[in-house]
Length: 200
Image (cartoon, rainbow, N blue to C red; front, side):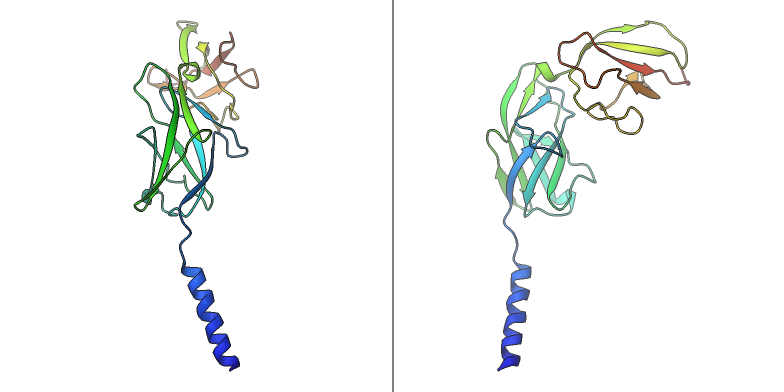
């Protein structure tokens, strides 16, 4: 009798361990460390979003995320046990796109979100370059980028670029960048500084 109970218990535990958790989204955030929503992205994309979910595949290639019908690219390291990270796409639009829903598909099962777990593609979050100073320089010179920027995560300026995807002069990537402020507000006169590569 005891042996039968042990076999029955083992069979139940095995069955419970093989049942699939249904695909579900808990929340979507613009930060991995807090619930920051709704998410505001540039019209040109490039913003990382973090989808707290369960029941998805651990293989990034088996998951697909779209925002308002546009593919949100999942990087090769963009899947953990509890989060899927993806990069917002370029909308190709010149006007704001508000409250774009997020659809996560894993296998063939899709789940979607609604406000506040949505993305606002905004011209106010889209960087605009108005001036570069000096207009001529030499290798290892400091160049200042003036324009409309909204940068809340500046990284460390060396290894982590934070919200900045790339800072370049023509085809030459800046060897180092520096932001004298802790963040850059949307319509300020603050600027990004770039140390031009020695290859120029």
